[in-house]
Length: 353
Image 1: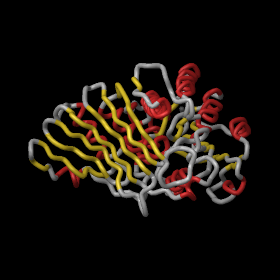
Image 2 (image 1 turned 180 degrees about the vertical axis):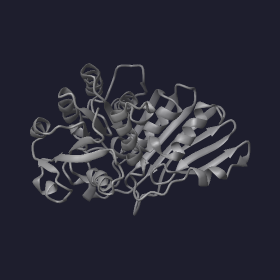
Image 3 (image 1 turned 90 degrees about the horizontal axis):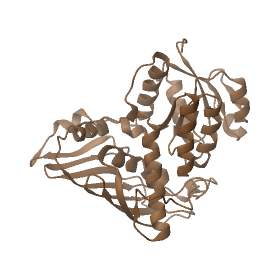
């Protein structure tokens, strides 16, 4: 691309859009210019002001009228497939918030379309760019932490019923429960940093909140690297979010990334000794549960698209996001059938999406 800035359009002006908008207002993404946005809710469109931005109630009209280098898909989860496909077919670069889709077949289709149209297609799992996560990944890749025995993921958050009363959160058609809405970030970290999954057993319940799907879930895994894993998550805790963590137990020590957004190394013990330098060097201060990863990702992506700069595919990889969506679908399938599910088998959730 010859221009010095990317013209960016947004579809979906809900909660996460306000996080992106703040980054643009503070000029945190200097190589991107937000020029248009779209939402079917006119009240949302008129609830904010930003320069001379164009506003649309119809996504097709925005695609037709605006010269856009990148489109951010920030709509409800159940619409990610539809809106990503519309943009990709118009040969637009796309960056979509997690999850990439609800149905596994849709994810496979989107990756194929992007390849055919020769455009960029990425998915946002912003915690992958946290200093604490990149530190852990680097040490795993270099085999510095020993042979992994267990991998434990815990998410203990609070969401009241107001959160689920917006018409889409917590529904099978548009979202899923705590697994696909909150815990998916930590599941993504586990399977893309530690190991892919071989076999799953899972249980869920709706204990505190009123929603169609689950507010609490636990799943046990046999990982492909031979280790055992477990994820546990709930939005029924009160009154506030209290923990989001990824913990590894190896033959050499214990390593735990915690914080509200996997933004702190809370434990780093190797060969019986606590390595305190990691606590200060890799911990990040954050304003909210979104963390700091969006800013890092958008800046990396702008350099990739403008200057053709090669960046680590792990930052935005749609193929790795697809692996996470497969894992989510298989966990739900396990609950639906009340049977263990093998990753190599071609069976997926019949409820999600």
